[in-house]
Length: 433
Ligand code: C2E
Ligand code: MG
Ligand code: MG
Image 1 (cartoon, rainbow, N blue to C red):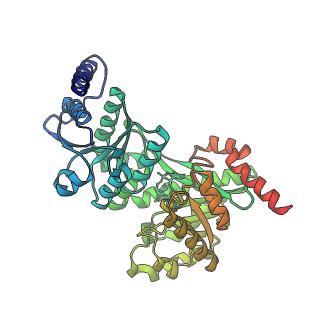
Image 2: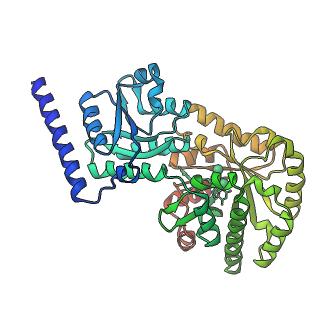
Image 3: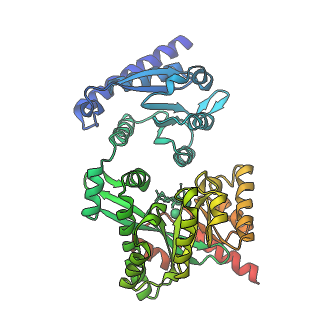
């Protein structure tokens, strides 16, 4: 019976492989080999089912990959050289270990390969794990169900192709001169009352060929190439113009803008900021500037001087992503902040990991002791929201309330917030009575 099953599996694998090759000729499946004709690419397949490994291996070979197979974590730990590859496909259920364990291991080893998660489990769980992997810095391409759609595998490989074809400086220069950058806005909610308190502006690049490019793909490039100054001034200008419009429409929101600390080194920074604020009739008290990392310990003194001057004008200052290696206690101690944003890797796990809960609560308490407003970002579940409310965190932000939206959607949203926000207002009303 077992032999019959194995033969059946094998036949199925061959049939699927033939079907892909056929489909690839017939339809427009992106053929990654066409774009990189002289490069053999390597893939590592981690799955405890040998037949499934064979099946995937056959499919990937058809896409020009040279494949290595592995049974699980122990196998990889004994041969870490196999991680130097372009693509890793990892099964979620791996005997003694889970996909989370493997992703944790890949993160610890700073693996740069594109990663596809494979599993027969529920799509939402897979999506959550892919999001967690992305947040931790892994290059997650997406998930593949079991059984899976061959076209879906092809589109994930196309994604790898896109990511391995890095953005060039010329493209970034075009984006700046042709004004391809725009802002989307994510609501910030007062957790005590459920009221909309503000919005964070997040930059997006509408690339003419690649489509929408996310900030994590180009901010670092802009910082490395001294384009960040021009980019940030464009962002501030867009943000101020929008804030001017909201204020003239009677919508009074606090608008948060992300500043690269490199902007602090700009000559005439304060003058330019003042000129933009008066040009767009923006009251600095309605603007929060979010900073992630200082420009280095040695220029903290200068940064403090400049940030004090910015604050004197009425702007609020927030320390973003607090709790990660970049946003340190030293900055909190030395620089004049008004707001502390807890990094989403803690908030996003506060409903499932006791350690993340403890850290989240401790950061809220730290902020309160320092008289800072505390913002929890990355709230995705009602449990995370309720936990933050219990800690008396001031502001919440996350997909549970709303994703970042273009301004027209944001305006419509602000008139009719969803139930996740209304639940807070109801909590507030019952607490008052
Ligand atoms: P950030 O400032 O910490 O922004 C929060 C990021 O988390 C945004 O990603 C937002 O879309 C995402 N996010 C919000 N809620 C949730 C949630 O519930 N779950 C998950 N998984 N994610 C959530 P985005 O827009 O991709 O921005 C990433 C980072 O890029 C930002 O992190 C910020 O550091 C940087 N960035 C964005 N816009 C700008 C900008 O205009 N200038 C500069 N210098 N950096 C920017
Ligand atoms: Mg931010
Ligand atoms: Mg943040």
